Amino acid sequence: MLTLKHIDVWLSQNHILEDLSCEVTEGDFVVIVGANGAGKSTFFNTIAGKTIPQNGTIELEGTDITMLSEQQRAGMITRLFQSTQLNSVGSLTVAQNLALAHYSRRRARLVDGMQVLPQELAERIIGELGIHPSLLEKPMHALSGGQRQLIAFVMATRHIPKVLLLDEPTAALDPQAATRLLQYSTQFIRQHQITTLLITHDPHIALSIGNKVWILENGRITKQYGAHEKKSLKPDELIGRIEYAKLAQ
Image 1: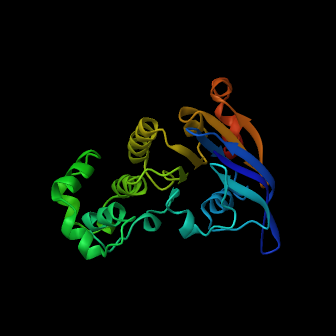
Image 2 (image 1 turned 45 degrees about the vertical axis):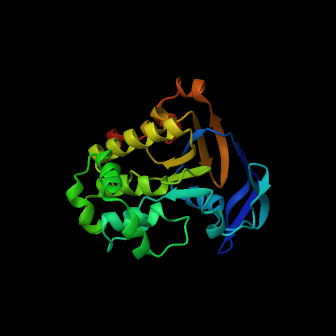
Image 3 (image 1 turned 120 degrees about the vertical axis):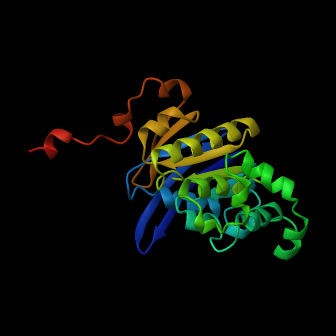
């Protein structure tokens, strides 16, 4: 479904991705774990089209998309970032942001979109998220981080993509907000069978959701675990653990 073959990415004379090859099967939910500097963000940038590799090919459903721009891939591949500021327009209202997502594939100005986006539809969308309809006219920047990420997820999946990239979407959230986002998103992904890749630093998340876990180290995917293998893994086998005894010395 999504295949990367022998990908090399150099940035400022640094070899970030090195002969990276992998294949994502349709319907997969792959959780990618790696330390800082392992190449996770560049990996997603390469899939999304923000970064064009110096070597290698990327195929989506058998079509070579290696040289397509980020804009050209946007209808097929969508991405939810860690930063809430990158996922929506903070100065626009919740309703306006929903309109942007709803009409993203039509040739319509925002004002036209706002005129035809039914209030009932907007209320139903955020009602499913447990967000009160009164917030529809609030600017996005006035919402909590958890509310904003939930709405951003809905915006990213308003038109079901072929591939969904979740780039550490819970990293800036408190535990309660992170739990709510993961509950809603994983249920939605499962319901619509969306091929998904998620980056996380949290090994507990990696072992709790998805059907595969990949380890990214030094620009390569060094280990791949399937659903059955995940059951026997421990969190510190994925990333390591803090040695609290040393902190007390």
